Each structure stands twice: as C-alpha cells, then as structure tokens.
Length: 442
Image (tube, rainbow, N blue to C red):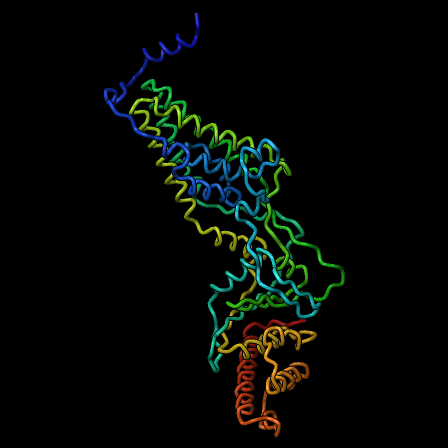
C-alpha cells in the first residue's frame, strides 16, 4: 500500500485547524509578487552580506525578489550554460556588490613625481569622507572657496588583510522574518494546504542557501607593495570639489591611490556555486508562480504575509548607507583613523600656496602649474616669487618691490598686489596648521 496517501490521510485526521475562508470563491493573484516584488530591496539587502557580522547565516526566510536576485548574481557564473541562462556583461564580485568601481580623483606625488590620472575606489571614498569633515576657515579674500583636507596617514595597512565586519542589530531583527516565515509555513501545514506550505518552505530553504553561498566570499583589502627605497608618498588628490593632501609613507599612500576592496571565493574564477544558487532561485520563482494559485485563499494569504514581512526586513537592510559603511571600514579598520584636518581657503591662489607650503615638494613649479595654469607675465612673476620663498623659507612678507615693474600695466600691478595678499593669507593658514598639529614633514 502506498505510504504517501497514508501519511496524507493521517495528517488530515490530525488537522488542528479548519482553513479560514475555505469557502471563498476567489483567489489572490500572486503572479506579481512571486519573484519580482521587492527585487531591488532584496538585491540591496544581499549586498550587505559581506560587511555585516553573521549576515550570511541569517537568510532563512521566504524572501521576495528571487527572479531579480538570480538575474543579477547569476552573471558571476562563467560557463556556456550559465551564460545562456543569465546573459549580460561579466564583472568581478567586488564591482557587482558595489565594493569597488568608483573612479577616484587625480593624484600627483610631491617627491617621486608619480602622476595617477584616475585613482582607486579608496580615493573616492576618502574624498567623500573629507567633504563631510568640519573645517577651519582661513581669513582672506573670497571668490570661490575651496576645501583643503590634510590626511596624516600614520598606519601602514598590510599588503592584504580581512577588515573586521561590522556588528549591528541585523541578527536580532532577522528573527522577525525568520519566525514569520516559519509560523506561516506551519499554519499552512495545519490546514493541509500543501501547495502554500511547500512554496513557503521552498522560499525559506532557497533563500537561506543562497545567502550562505553568496556570502561565503572573503572580504579583503589589498594594496601594492612599493619599491624598496621609495621616497615618502606625500601628494595631493585634486578634484573640482576639493583637495586632499596625503601625508605618509609610500605604502600608506598606496593604500588610498591603488588599494581596493575585493571578494575572494573558493569557486573562482567560474563561480559555479553562485550559478547553481541562481538556478535554484529561478526554480523557486517558477514554482511559486505556478503552484501558489493552486493553494487555498488562507494559504495564499500566509504566503503573501511571509513575503511582506521579509520585504520589510530587506527594506530596512537596504536603507543603510552603503557608502557610509565602506567609509567606516576604510577609515577605522584599514587606515586606523588617520588624522584629518580641513581648512577652507577663499581663493584658488591661496589654496595652491597653502598646498605647496604643506607638501614642500621637490619641484613646486610643476604642482603649481598643474593646479594654477595661468601663464601671463604677471602670473609668472607671482609664481616665481612664491616658489622662491617656499624653497628658501624666507617668509611671506612682500613689499612694493615685488609688484613694481615698468613692464607691467597698472592692472598687472593691482593683480600682483592682490595675489601676494592671497599668498600671505595662505601662509597665515599654514602657520595656524603647524601650531595646531605639531606635525613635522620629513
């Protein structure tokens, strides 16, 4: 005698509940929520799996958006089968999880002459961190104020390390969708709605497996090793929105200009395990699309309830500022809280002088011309006078002899007086910084 009918009959005789709304003549149309509803929130929540402690172990709930998750992360898998099932441009895991890929600003070294036109994701994060720093205003003329942040990199990160994951309340809050999914699954079992029971259970299992497998990658920070005997790595990151002066050893500065976050999986470079998880998510989507309409109205309501609570949890996770999370990892776990001091200077000319005074570069004229390309007779005279004082450490007291010249017009003389005052204002800001920091450039 077949055993399954016996088990079914036994369960029906032991049913504790009669399905509410069992006599209803209508059914919920769940086709719109089976795999697409909440997809963006689910993808965004999945992107936190590598940075939150224990997050990969807490995916055991009937999450919505299985189709969207499968299409996104299935592109990691590399084989003819997976390429046909999940078409699209292949990318590396760090970029897909938005841990890498932002272009950084231009970098120019003060001593080695290195120029990097586009720096790494780390530099972009540091620029955003510096933009939010409180600032000290340098007195003087104002045209277009620009911020200059001095980042003193006292810590040299290892060539490769695993940054500590953040501890949050995510494990506590994850209990809510997990419990709701289990309770709704059991309720469907008690009323013998096998379709709804099996589909909620399938969603729990597939979501838990996918979260664990996708979250199994190791989160890494890596940077290149500089050549032995390299000079200090001091230099500037420059953009239209501000300037960041990096002060530190070459290896420390490399962490910003060339460092990167990455994910390392045991299955790379083909990522078959992620590909098969994406297949499971697609099977879940198709099964729920076809079988949930066959369940009772009560079972369908339980299914939708589990999805709604899970969507709320995913929405809470996706609301976290991922840029802020990465900035915290970089500043606290990788760079070990470097000292950031920000000044706002009123003009670009005072900003350039301030930067040169801080850096004391080998060839100040090159940095000055890159930041301030003006090239008239008056500007060349001003640049020569400023560079001469920086190199000779004579101070920044200018007098009439510095701008009086028979070859200059009255307008040129007036411009020079204005520019020399800007330089003097920058020097005042420089002395204020040195008094406050006690930082010695070596």
